[in-house]
Image 1 (cartoon, rainbow, N blue to C red):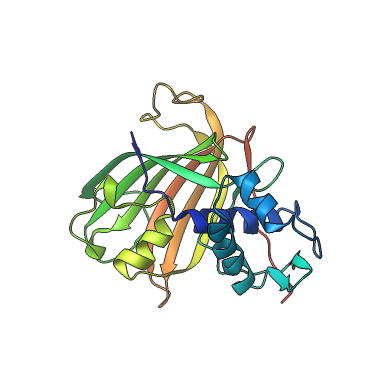
Image 2 (cartoon, rainbow, N blue to C red):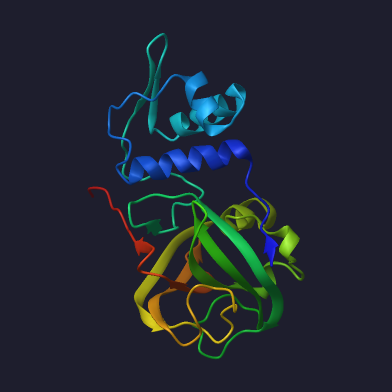
Length: 235
């Protein structure tokens, strides 16, 4: 098992704050603690925290008032690295991380919907966690035409961040189908659920900016540890 390459620290912090805001843990109009206090609590340099806060501000979720402080501003749609990651802890929020189990180039599965033009795909299997709580197994299939070779060391904890910055592939929309299924036969022996055990299940088709399917994924998540949440703003 390999740890996926961590996102830059300031992005991790900005994403954590955005997920906390989305979950309602930080109320609209709430004033954040002083920056030095926040930096100490998070174990960060003040400069790193300020870079994270600037990122949150740029996305419209923070108002920085000179001489007064930083104030939360709620907004329904945000350009977040994890905008399409819809699993949260039962209490809400949680910063996603990933452990890569395997990456293999192989013939696409016969039961998968059409995605991409290549007959092969990159199959990525991962364990997902939120705030160090293991919540899910993932099997992601990326069209083989995107790149000939992908290794575990190439991947970041956000695959969509990797797609955008390394492959030039922007995921613009997803379609999720949610239900229940048995844990797969490849479930690791040390995973807290066992192969064949019933659990929550998500099938996803991800589309690029032109509306073409580029990725197919399956996620088995523990409903006793996480929930699926989709938030939509007013149309």
